[in-house]
Image (cartoon, rainbow, N blue to C red; front, side, top):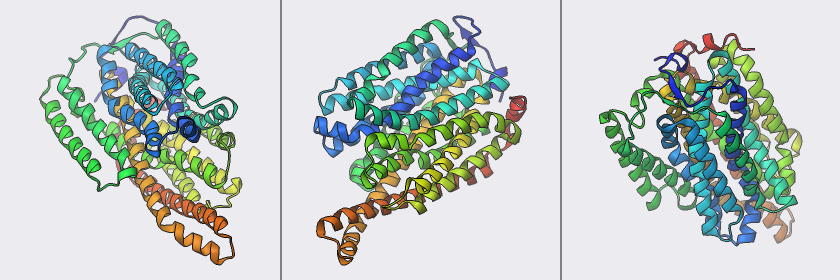
Amino acid sequence: MSTASDAAPTTSTASHDNRWLVLGIVCLGQLMVILDATIVNVALPAIQTDLKLSDTGLQWIVNGYTLAFGGFLLLGGRLGDISGRKKIFVAGVAIFTFASLMNGLAQNEAMLVGFRALQGLGGALLSPAALAIITTEFEGPERAKAMSVWGAIAGLGAALGLLLGGALVEWTSWEWIFLVNVPIGALVIFFALTQIADTRAENAPSHDIMGAITGTGGLVSLVFAITQTQEHGWGSGIVLGFLALAVVLFAIFYFAERGHEDPLVPLNIFQTRSVAAANSVGLLAFAAIFPFFFFLSLFMQQVLQYDALKTGVAFLPFSASIIFTATAASQIVPKMGVRISAMIGTGMGLLGMLGFAVLLDVDSPYFPNILIPMVLLAVGMGFIFVPLTFLATSKVEASKAGLASGLFNTTQQVGGAFGLAILATLATDKTDGAVQGHVQEAIAAGKTPDVAQKLGVAEALVEGWQLAFYIGAALIALSFVAVLLRVHDEDADLDAELVHVG
């Protein structure tokens, strides 16, 4: 398989030398998407109170976005290859920005959930197009540096969303967690239209209608089933029904792609070992890491009684660590190789997850019980994301750059949704089963019934989250094993390309 640098050329509507400005533009667009994935978490209590949402409605503020985003990523990536990456990127930013505006103006549950789903669709167009633009714009050593910036944006956005969400909720109102995207989106659209050259596959494939319907339908069904497990359980009719539908649609998709001259997803892309390795390792790692923000944010607010702003500030060391680590990774990956770098990342992530599982309790001090595991996990994320992103995109033909980036983004979203569904369900079951025992222990220790109830609930919540972190640690341990088995530096000339970086 040829690398992107020696693959068939792509067509362009303009020529320019502003590669680093282009990187800044697409990263700013991606930052909006990453911010939105976490900024809502801190604001959920305020939204629920203001709009009088049910618990199910509150859950769908998150799930509506995840469903559309995870379901349409592959289609979004392929559309960029076919119709032009700049065109799809701008369309994605425009949809995302419009939906953000309407979310900020939402007056009821239906309006907010509906436009959250539209935001997800915009993100599904935006993200793979952005990564494909980087992949086709940069080659060799410069691509490694660009990927390190991309990795830093991913980590920064995830943690910055919690800080910004807390600040906006405390100082203004929850509506501004959405409205803040409007001027940023307008700025991104302006610079994208004037600075980014449009690229697409030279021999653009035809539209694969059956592949688009069954592939997207299968992903939407799978993500929907996963998001329903916390409310209904894995054995419920709605979950099993949509899982069965996903299997059927994926089976049709498989045979449709095999028989199509220009398929939405050329199945031979999985024969590229670097692509298969990056996505298999990433699926496990993201399933463990993405739920971290959800659980730790709830722990700080519900157990330690932090307000929204203090919760956001508490994540600042995470932001600083991920930025530093992703930058350092661009220097270290060339020297150590993608395999050793990914081993360092998964190893550090394992230590961080185990640290949370062991150290969290109802009286946890911020230092060292929270800060040290947080920094370990941040370092791990940087050394996981940078080499995996490069592996996932650097060895595919330029005509499939959007597909490869969409596939990797899909892996992140589906892995994250799957991990959160499993961990949240098991944590809730553990908590429900432990509450009464902890309440009785507190009463036996001389606490009043009210105090005993609060203390018992807090201890039961911590016990549930500790179980979630232990399972997260097991998932990262599996990703470490996957690195050992699937990632090989001799897979490709990645390290040869990277060796002159820095």
